Length: 268
Ligand code: CTP
Ligand code: MG
Figure (cartoon, rainbow, N blue to C red):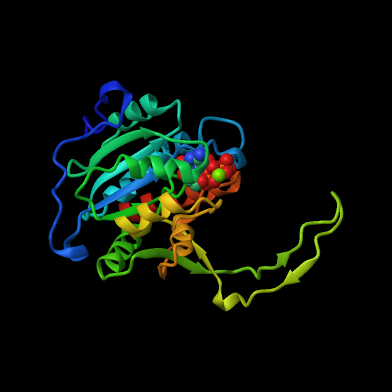
């Protein structure tokens, strides 16, 4: 798709025509938009370009993430939240890569925190999309079945849905060390079978997510956590091990291996 990221007037969010209008059938037939926060630097990955723009199998991680959302036939709009000074670069990048024609793309500049970036993406959403996915650009390899399972659970009536996996490691809660260099005392060992590691895309009834972003001011590391604080029920659907987050250098090695395996499977 060559015209995914048309220049926006006056630097505001670009609006691509063709967005379906609001449905009157509730969430079962609701249009789905995906917001992709991609404005982080990727400090833990080490020096280099912003994490979302780093290559994976020769293609920027962000392009993989956009394709992963657009792979779902339900997703008609993707809002990419670019590094604050990099919206132009991201638009050109998306122009240069093939994306499904049926999916509209908006690019907006992000903020200083993930929470802020997601809020800026939500602010740019046009009317008519009553289900919103929020998906980390740093999870480029999430399979479409996981995306569709999240959408289906929201369509079935859940206001907030997270894909999640059981933990392999036992988790300890600690108290911060009394002084630098001192050991951290363990204060609890939560029962592992009741813990889940959550992934993205997280799916929401749009109004529920917007309300959470308008009212919750605590520092929260995921969007479902904000919805929890508003008192709404969040539910879990099965996640996928290929939806892991690229955070540290070893994750890049794993991501390349997953891509290589997919290519091999495509050949046979
Ligand atoms: N993110 C964002 N805006 C920010 C910070 C993060 O849009 N100000 C996005 C990242 O681009 C990423 C997602 O939120 O897609 C998850 O964040 P994380 O994996 O922590 O990425 P970074 O913040 O870039 O990495 P680090 O914390 O190592 O710097
Ligand atoms: Mg971060």
